[in-house]
Amino acid sequence: MKQLSGSEIVIECLKEQGVDTVFGYPGGTILNVYDELYKHSGEITHILTSHEQGAAHAADGYARATGKVGVCMATSGPGATNLVTGIATAYMDSIPLVAITANVGVALLGKDSFQEIDIAGVVMPITKHSFIVKNVHELADTIRRAFKIAKSGRPGPVLVDITKDVTASYADYEYHKPEPIAKVTSTIKSDDIEKAVNIINASKRPYVLVGGGATLSGASKALADFVEKIDAPVCDTLMGKGAFDGTSKRYTGMIGMHGTKASNFGVNKADLLIVIGARFSDRVIGKASKFAADAKILHIDIDAAEINKNIEVDASIVGDAEEILKTLNTKITAKKKADWMAEIKAIKEEYPLHYDMENLTGPAVINKIYEKTNGEAIICTDVGQHQMWAAQYYSYKKPRQLLTSGGLGTMGYGLGAAIGAKVGCPDKTVINIAGDGCFRMNMNELATASRSNVHMIEIVINNHVLGMVRQWQTLFYDKRYSNTVLNDGVDFVKVSEGLGCTAFRVTTVKEFEDALTKAIAGEGPYVIECVIGQDDKVWPMVAPGAAIETCFDSEEELNK
Image (cartoon, rainbow, N blue to C red; front, side):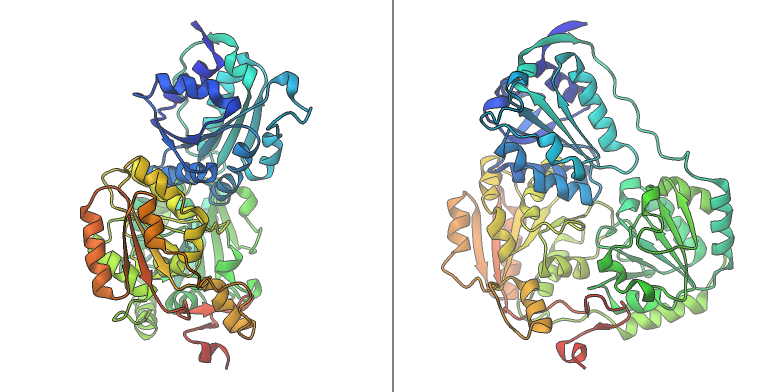
């Protein structure tokens, strides 16, 4: 046991937890922590971002890519509030993240002091827990508890706010080995397992829907065994990409508003839908009363609050998805369902995804990225049309390959996330796919990538409009393009070069292929601006609030 300052305790606790990287931005109240971080620069790498939001997104991307807890830091007031969007993004997608902020001294709290804000109160609805530490003797245990909460059960972000006087005060510190995080099994009831086994064994047309919880659980192997055993087709949500091999003959694509016709039609032909680690988002289910209307639904999820929240189910099992699937695999009776799989295969063949791949379109860009990376890259996205194209046209073979803001839909997420992913997985090719609207939001993080010499590739699909919003305006607002045209004088190549990146502008598939080849082989950050048509759309599409089987491949078909 030894006496350490609060700042020293923060760093020692990070080292205890195995933290090797922190993303952040210093300021007045957190200076003591940064001074201590300076002394441990050989043990913990600090990535200075251009904006605190970029730090939160980078910590999130690091966590999604590595499976570890991401860590970000910020000072009080605006530094702390700038983390909020990134914290909310992590919360909606159940990503383990610890945000450390500093506040004014205890004597100044509640007095509207300079850069004072109750950040613990601000983030209460968007964290698993938030703390404010006013006593140095409570600091170490609070940080340890924060990491445990972030990692355990359904993961999520935790915020620890530390008053400045605590960072300077002294307390006894003793090293604690982190507690192992056990899988959630206590909630798995034998009666629920038995009911699920009976339903599965009785099914003749089972379908499996995979969500992000399968990735968080590490359930891919057990899932693959389960699917083979029950002889079922598989679809996924946006967050579930890669949990099941997207190149498998069983895979039918994403489900929902921009899901494949094969998945949307197939699910509505099933007599049993087995949902693993998904929460029945409105973008997935469409009109709730029409979703899988002829099927019994078995819901497997770690969070009891998700059961019957959006969709009434016939059976459920609460607990860790991997452990549940392992148990089911020992109990279910294997039956081949050749007729059912043949029917799904026929639907896939009748309704393939199709798009112009000869000219430079969003899908052509994604298709070429897949080809040049052999399907092995970590793909990050922002939010909009390019996000949906990345979900449709890149086949994710493994979990943690697609990093995207699913629940919150955060424009500007991808660049910070790509920086975090590349720092966490330096041997992987990391590519962020952005639209021009998203790129404008956080393009300043290119300076972070160049400053830290992060070799990641930023693809900007530039149609000079807010593409997804324009698509809705075209289809549902009689082409009233209110504030969605971005055809101004901003030169993305010059901006990118000014921020220290190598940049290209391309207008053909061949030009893109050449630029991407150079970017993959190069060093440091690259930006490739891909100029496409402003009225390219994402198809298939389900109209908002409609049943998912009413999905259309064209504007003409939608308007019939």
